[in-house]
Length: 241
Image (tube, rainbow, N blue to C red; front, side, top):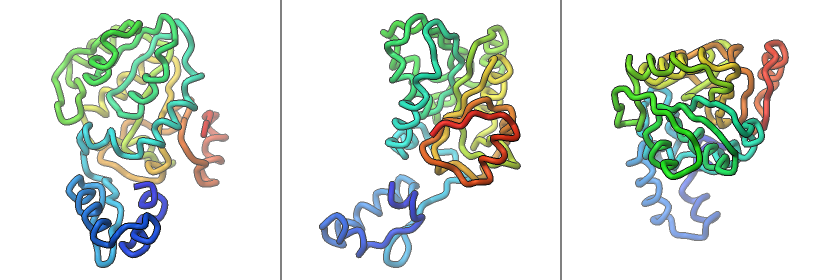
């Protein structure tokens, strides 16, 4: 997947030489990736599935670009202080960051993530669930009840990820219910931190969550294009990579 993210297309013969395995082994691996909706096989190889309009399940997303998420988590860890109050979305990237915050003291976390709540049930975090309707596909709580809970609290920081981001189109999501939750979380926080790996830059997804200028800090895994630096400077956004 790392090679596909870098080059968008890979060839069976090149991969078999690189990994010193047979062409048939590579074809089987590409077939498995296609079944997971991560690639599209073509003559002689495969191309990456852009996922622009796809709402990929949590269980599939958690294994996509995992090394990038770990890198981002390590880069973002220092942005969170002891005693902080946080709102955290149901993204796999934010979950990766929370795993690096276990030594932080007196953190309060308000979240709509079922996976986060389950994983940290025995941690020292004070966790407040938004409640709401379970969107099982993404392990996320959504809907009016979740929004009303979020509106009751004001926090230091919101941690969110996104499906795609673009200078002109802003932050985008693959589905409206979670986009609404993220929008509401941002309104309750003093500052907004976006965790987004480089594969999401200059892409488009189904629904807009907010303008990029509303984000205070972007943490990613790779230096973006020069156009991003101009925009980030103009809008006083902190970029970490």
